[in-house]
Length: 550
Image (tube, rainbow, N blue to C red; front, side):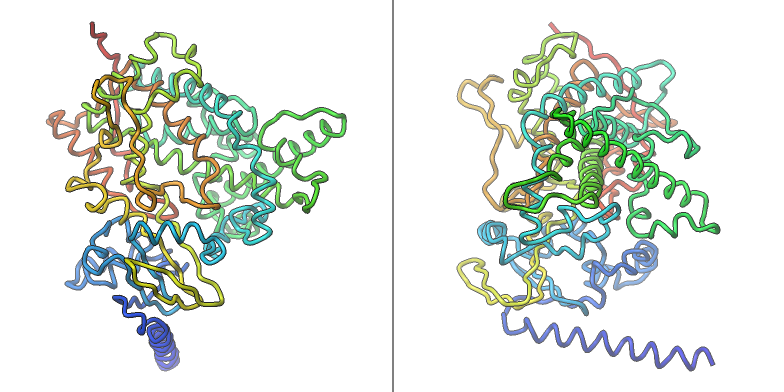
């Protein structure tokens, strides 16, 4: 009986998929662009949940490398890089049962897309999982987004850069001390960079200082703000997908209940800080100047626009924490292991650090005097984001009416309800822009020198528009771009200014083989919510003092 019932249901389901694909194909067939058909949309929530296990099954079949396996998986672009665009051209369409996806790898067209915010808006439904604590800037659109962007811009101004520099430098110095300690036979860089990024965030956003490597307590009663946030960020997918009631359900696993307790604890800390800031504001005080302070001030009387509600304050606190922590921590984890695998790049940035910051006491280095000069350190970040950007892409959405887009001097009429995707991975790796070694991690490509060939003459390379957009572009670019750059460079100074990092060799393994293994761990990466290494903990890193050279 069950089989007899399931067969017609399955037949109906497959028929509906076929019908929707045919309808979507008809909408774009007349454009004359190359088309690939996918039976599942890459952003299908159920498919995202099971695709890893399903992918393992597909590997055993000859068609595993077909379009089904290649273009359905969330984050397929990281593995494909520029290959599909090299084969099909600068623009092609992925037809799915839900909607059509137009992928564009053309610098002029991408620049046009980013400049036309009204024609190509953010697909807000893709970001609804970020409504953990309330509506926020990432989940708003149109006039509401403009209002929130203006009201929440305070935490990202230049006055915060020196705070980021000082705390990141201090945390990185402490992390290096831990890595050099005799009791540390080897450290997991991914775990430690998450800790460092969390500590910097806690200080800059909330003026709460924590010593590096402080442990997270096991009981909810002893959760601090930092502990609560750490648990939420480490379990972001569960926290975003499951309702809070499900995390406190009596029969829920203990790990879920712990996440639920962390969410409640974090909300309590937010509410307390908001109340404290409001009392300061009522007394005529300017407040603490941290993230909560800026948002509370934005919830007061604001000329010409509605102030932030409490729900929006809580929502933006969460999304700024999530966006500011995970992307930074992941980028640091990738860069650390890439540097471990490439000791010549460590020598290269250490030469710059010693040239501009020749002191044993790194705490005396001032942001405004040192940061602008450390172009090689910044080049390491740019090259890491070029090849290993945490964001799988920056899709845009063509809404309820058609529009036009010009690609290679040919104008196309883009139908309504199409996702238009500036192909980040393709543009960041295409040999057209980056040369024959475009897939090699080589930070030196970002530095150009004048005739004198000395450090003072070096200039950071500025890619042509539309070829590199690690922080997105246009009005909806990442507001924390500068702070992320400052934090990264400070960590480079704190860790590599006077140290050398190397992998801990396995039994019978040479240093050359160990470094090759590190690169394989880096390349073994997949997109879950963001791009991450599958098993970074399998690499242990040892730090030792760098010998002073005359």
